[in-house]
Amino acid sequence: MLSEMKRLLVGKPLANEQLAHERLPKRTALAVFSSDALSSVAYATEAILIALMYANREALGLATPISIGIVVLLITVAFSYRQTIMAYPQGGGSYIVSRDNLGKVPSLVAASSLLIDYILTVAVSMSAGVAAVTSAFPFLDPWRIEIAVGLIVVLTLANLRGLKESGSVFALPTYLFITSMAVMILTGLYNIAFGTVVIPPVPHIPHAEAGHAITIFLILRAFAAGCTALTGIEAISDGVPAFQKPESRNASTTLIIMVVVLSLMFLGITQLAESYRIIPDGSLEPETANSQLARAIFGGSSVFYYVIQASTMLILILASNTAYADFPRLSYFLAIDRYLPRQFAQRGDRLVFSNGVLFLGVVSAILVIFFKAREQALLPLYAVGVFLSFTISQFSMVQRWRTLKTPGWVGNAIINGLGATVTGVVLVVIAGTKFFEGAWAVLLLIPILVIVLLSIQKHYLDVAEQLSLNDAPAPVALRRHTVIVLVSGVHRGVVPALQYGLSLTSDNIRGLYIDMDAESTERIKTKWAQWGSGVELEILPSPYRSLMRPIREYIHRMEKRYHDDVVTVVLPEFIPNRWWQNVLHNQTALALKTMLLFTKNVVVVSVPYHLDH
Image 1 (spheres, rainbow, N blue to C red):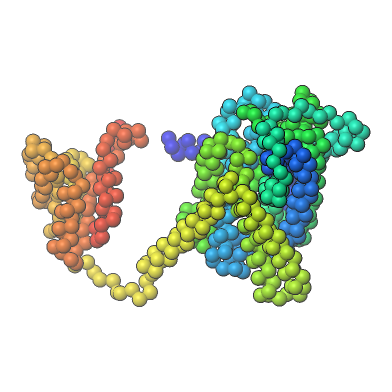
Image 2: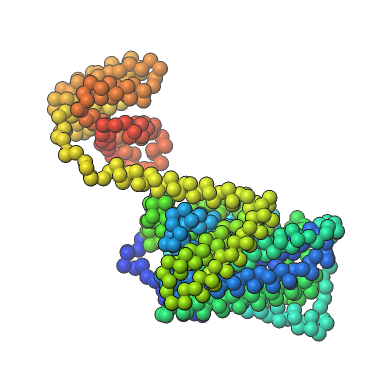
């Protein structure tokens, strides 16, 4: 039944030969790899406005200058990543680049940052996508958590089935979003130019009435909030092998196009939000800033308003799906390097890294529930890991140029050095201004995760050393073999187990029964005399009705008596015909196997007897 349910949800297994890689032209690659970055305009401007609201309404006029600074930062980071694309045509994620150039610990810091970033990408994008829906349909707001978790479940199942990053899946929603944003921005600018701007009613926001001074800290705080616009910019450098040849050149061109489109959308939305005096809604059923803007430009009953909200939700779902591709891939590399459990390196029935997909879905759903699907509550955690991985990746490239000294290496090193310096400074700003809003949790979690990764690798190295045949002594033949058949009763399930034990040894075998009831013990003795094949039955009293302790103590006594002995414990098990029938029986055999598994020099053999009905 379980296997049938798995087939229904996940689909039929695929053969290894069916693993295919699609080569993407630039127009399709833009849709595939840019959805994460482009989707950030759904919440980045709003994050700036929320930060500025803590001063006064006049402070909202700083949104455009701050967004210009963020665009300059975006361009700087993009030029740095162009260097990575050219140097790593096989794909240059922060973990790979830092592992090759900076060593173990920096690469694990980058990997930890990225793992956290991918989880937050799903949580933030799904929460923001639901916010787009509830802004258009406020009556759905009480169910925003359920909707977000439901979308995560659907996306997880889709990726377990092997959802491909194909143009047919990505192109339409991505270009619909770009087109709808372009129409909204151009219409809004037209209204401004010809004086037809309709200012919507301004909601009462206590923070905006407080009249706090505009300080450097406030400006830096707003800048840090808006830096979420840079999330996802590294996706193209990770996916260079998916481009059509020449891969690096096409990826580089696509990166430039993405940055231009993202910059224009971000600046346009911020300028319009300022001109239309959009203030983030602080009500119990908040409406996103983008929704307010679209409503002000087109009207709340306009078809195009709903097109914008729908395209926003779709692009945010695609942004989540980018994480579903990148998180399992990074987990695979870490598992290959022994930093994560090996299960993360194994492909499932549908040729995807199923364990990575499941882990991402579960953890992101927990985050959505904990933060009540409010993306603005999650954003302070988001940018820290992003900029930490940016900084490490760019410093890694500087080290690469210094080591290889290829033609033009000085100029390349300067570009990456500038990128590393700028992102490093921004990282400090984000960590400082967002520390008490949640950034502290990420800053604490990253070193903990690094320690966990190192501990996992140490375990695997220890296991490999202990299993190695190097300098191992020559194998010694067993001098004595003791077989113990555990007896819970004398029935058809016990007789085959006893015969199996006799096939191992005929002169050093015994049955073992735990006496917890005198009347039952007498019946066992009588039946054993008939069916025990002449094997001695030892009966251990258990006045406190314990089963495990007498067996464990008996085996330890046998072990001490014969130091060169190997003890084989034979467990008779009857297997019910239906899976649900297991609930009706004590799982004693499972408990015994678990206990004996950690006992040295003891071999446990399970002899099943399958019931017919």
